[in-house]
Image 1 (cartoon, one colour):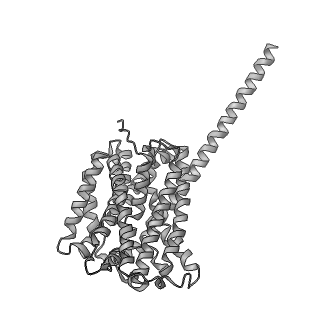
Image 2: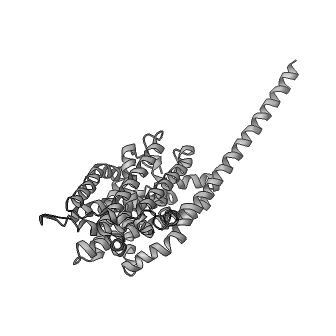
Image 3: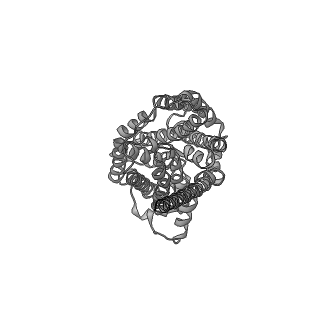
Length: 387
């Protein structure tokens, strides 16, 4: 069955990348292991993210019209690819469940404590299912429209924090007080997987780009801007709350917003932070959802829209069942997910695929040269016979 061609512009790709990387990273905070040098760890993590997105373009440049599943099929055939595709579907949908759980816990704990988390998860997943039924183009346009508000609200939050006198730059000192090793360790053991390694979900998006020529530049810009926003938000948390308060808070950015108090009039600007978080979580959850749907499309050879609503209900259910409580959810995300899921799916399998593509192309090139040399020899024989 012929699949419908979808188109995404470079500006839409940029906004999708920014919101995706902010996503749940801005909900729970990242780089906490580096303490008051968390912002430096994020900067280093951003450089790693640029390397990751550049390596991803190895496949994009060689197979501009193939997504990750089709590239795997090119290397090892359809039967084995179906097994790998199924594994990736489970991975993508599981991470989508975790992202939705992050947002559900935030809403249930801090914003709507009397509303059951199941209801919020169901509502959010229904919206995701509807957007995916309409197509990735609709998600891209949604991201493009609302991203300027994200920048505006983050700027307002910074202005209000300075205006209320809540900022103490001494909190960020001493810089590199424990040396550079905690920063490097945090970047290479945490940030390389979450959030930057999760860019692998975009391996199914680049085929829809209208202009692939500048996709690498735009992708690097997107990772750079997301790193800058994460770095700024981390600095705002540290200089407003202090390292100890940030480490104790489940949702440090929300706690930072609650510090704002200007003349006992401008207070509780939680809505700004909730909007930033909601947009990021929605885009990130939807991108992982879309990647899983594209895997189902590959296996069953049916348009992914057919699976949008049923799979969204599965995500809604498992976002609740995935962990007993928020503490268990966070521990699972720190101790198990990076090593048992992120590492194989973000590093091991893509590296094997890289080697297979190189071997396949080398084999094809050597065959072409052999065929060319045979043709040349036959031409020489014909010319000799003529003379």
